[in-house]
Image (cartoon, rainbow, N blue to C red; front, side):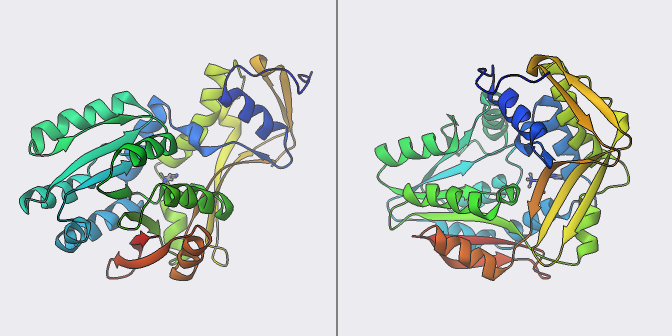
Length: 321
Ligand code: AVJ
């Protein structure tokens, strides 16, 4: 029982789920992991000892806060625009430094979730009340477009957490090109990229023994069950992680333990799984300087400099047009 393809879908989640599960090989989009429960699980991931990305980036920002703040500053002040602000734990290090040095700036965190933004605003009010916060609810590019229309002073665009890693190279170039389009000559992009490293370290980060990453991935099935009237038995799938050191791509899969059929009522679908058939749920790309330089070039940007940790586990790059 398959829907005729011309049927209108109620939500983007419904449409993307339909496309992904009727594709061969099957896939789901990682952006849908992040509902309330998914956000919470990601918070837990960031606190795991194996998930080195967060502590690496935090160290880079702490060690280089003076140089970073200085590179952001401008005589006529600037707007610090953060795409995907989250809880702001890492950003606060930079904000504190900017305030301490008396630099003139406004902080404009951009997020889809008004709730996340309001929590960030109130925690900043308590912790660093000197910061002028102007929360921006909306999608990244619509908001950037709007901001580049009305604001004339220097823009520093901040994207932390190696979120770009969830994109294919083609999508990453589009993402960077969209940002580049909103940038003028003086503007800067400051962005985190997780680096290629010992493959075992990467596998461990996405394959924790406590099973938090597994639950994080399976949240896609949980959401399909609750929002699309799906009937996934999450116990009949297990989490599998791979890392290809040649391409630098870590991939997450949910693998079916047995042959099974799964009904998703609101999609009018019955999905057939062979034993050991997989659903790709996420990619987490790892980079090196030559990949980053190539992506930048394709997007009409160039790398001005970068900040790394001692072992170059992770790097934050400054891009300009
Ligand atoms: C939020 C996209 C940076 O890919 O490392 C963490 C998400 N997935 N553990 C990443 C994630 C599994 C994370 N990003």
